[in-house]
Picture: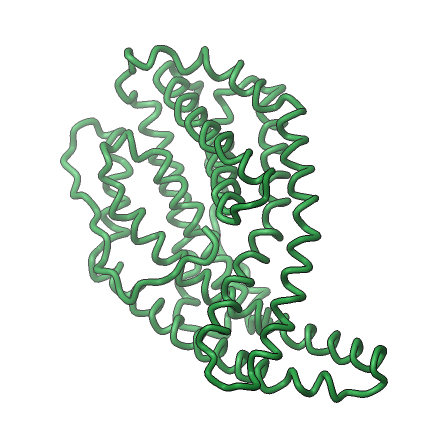
Length: 358
């Protein structure tokens, strides 16, 4: 990835707010229910990942593991202390093991699309070589993914979570109304995640700040997962903001993908040149790869430039629509008990973006 010109800038990014007071029954019940829902989504993707036939199963399991980690972290005061940290650690290991595999899948799909778009007769040679190396790497990663998922299942963590959380979730037919304690907790967490995102606003219009834009994507994802978790308390009124955050995340994700390509391609070319010299004793086979890969590199650069422009425009639309101001007001509505709050609306979507990594 290109180095940011301000990668050492210290930002005033707020840490997670610590819980104030002990969780009440409504707080504990809600936390257990949303966590069990996310655990169920994770469980249903495990067979597909272990079989290795559907690359989207890896993506869905990775997203499910992130959402489960969000619930475990944001409601950790509700869990038995001896278990909560263990659960988070085990799920984090699964997320990390899936990361490289998902990245390889996204790269393969991207190069396959470029091959289909390529019209020059001699360009596919370089792209197909790149595809070959990516597929080889993805094949090597599969065994690691399967081992980590098997360890999660056989280690009993999933059963332990279900055993401990099910009694806390109570009877689904007898749900508590949102309590003031839960409302204060939701407001504090949403506000903290929002401030984390907005801390990166100075870098929105600075395309060279690759590091900060990547961190901004992560902050958008963290806020989005937080809103998804608490949305049932707000009767679905957070959906417009969630949609906007998904668009921000997708645009910044595509920018980051381009940054990764710009860092990867020189290393790939260097390795292929060494292979050609070692096997053939000259550079001629390597030079045949250059036209297609040079074309590919130019397309990546153009895509990054275009996507950054779309991101800047979309970010501006969130301010024109007062999205963040309205979110702040809504976040505190449960704690204020009954004060009317305007529902945040998603900005009108710009050019649709194909999500890279959710």
